[in-house]
Image (cartoon, rainbow, N blue to C red; front, side):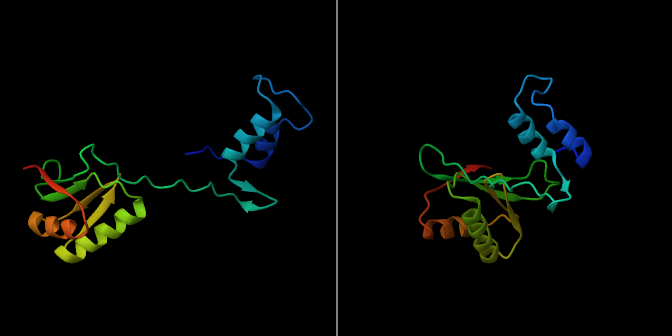
Amino acid sequence: MAQKISLADWQQQLGRGDNKPDNGSTVADTQHNADAALVYSTASGTVTPPKTAEPGGTAYPDGAIRLRREKKGRGGKTVLTISGIARPAAELTDICSALKKKCACGGAVKDGIIEIQADKRQLIEQHLNQLGFNVKWAGG
């Protein structure tokens, strides 16, 4: 998280009136670094940082997606994880939503992996095959 600084400190970092900062970088470099830490400006108000794109999934070399049943570290609850779908995060969210409706259960997309909170491997495999995916079961 960026450190919050006041406008006076920000102007001091810019080196108003001083063309060479002490650390050897140029004034343009200093201004870019100061803009990254800027939280509020009297000219424009609250400054929001640009949003970074959410990562999508990554594919396995064989092109198949993995359907894995996990229980460890989840308080004894069974969760199916679906990995290997090389699509953007928005498409992964749509696929997750369709699977949750099909299974009548909860789920989420975390770090490019779809998590479904039920043990309905056969139903999920059928649905993913209809969507055109090659599915392999992995794990227990």
